[in-house]
View 1 (cartoon, one colour):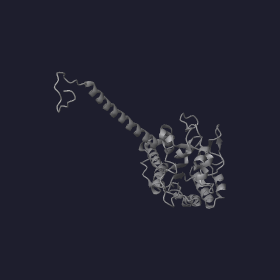
View 2 (cartoon, one colour; view 1 turned 90 degrees about the vertical axis):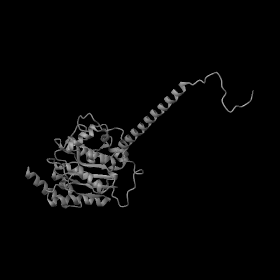
View 3 (cartoon, helix red, strand yellow; view 1 turned 90 degrees about the horizontal axis):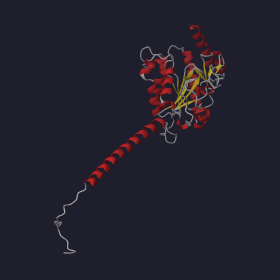
View 4 (tube, one colour; view 1 turned 30 degrees about the vertical axis):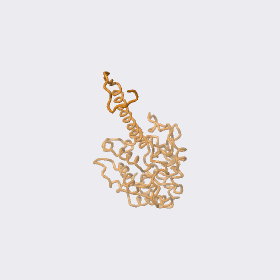
Length: 331
């Protein structure tokens, strides 16, 4: 009867048609969605890793706010216990004077404070000393390592205005330059922004000059120092110990090179006038001319002594003179 509804399906002689293609297409669609989701999650993970490794420690606005009274910089210098007390006292006074002027902190461990493995040169203590300082000052932004054979000559200018301001740093950065002169195939990045820099260093004519360096504290710094202090590098017979290990990891680890800014030596690691050899590019010197920020006293003591007299800590001059004379007598 037309228009009448039946509670049960009508019996017909035509069997229902089931299309297997619809089930297959549904299964294929679900499988494709699962595959796509896997790719999306994998892409997010890769991007997260890249941002973590290459994204820097963050701008000052995105970094966690430090507690009041936190120093912006910690000056780290390691001392050989065999050095004379007058020499160590004078170098410490030089650092403390500079730190007091600008609200920085100082940290003076001995080279023997750390387990460096048997037969490893004491100069390797630089690396765990920086890691130690990072633990003691977890909210401090920058670590400034300065060798015990150096003096801070310009005590009136803070590191922030002299070097660490991003725009100032960009104006000083040496870009597209062989990391290890003169002919390393690995060169410094030409597009690195000041905010992205976590490691500031200089080079002389022989290679990277690690007597004065700056590291931005944070997760990347922990990774970098742990990689540098790897037992494989400490046990390897590098001619210049941690210095050549540093050159190796900077050249062959892109995650480290991507954070490195090379600046002219005269900015933060100047040597003394005596015995200067200028390279062909006019930038790298051995040793470098005109001490402005630091002076490596064991390169040439006399020029250092003359300039040290102008420091508020005038006792540094006599201490360096005596210690340098003693070293020369020991040769």
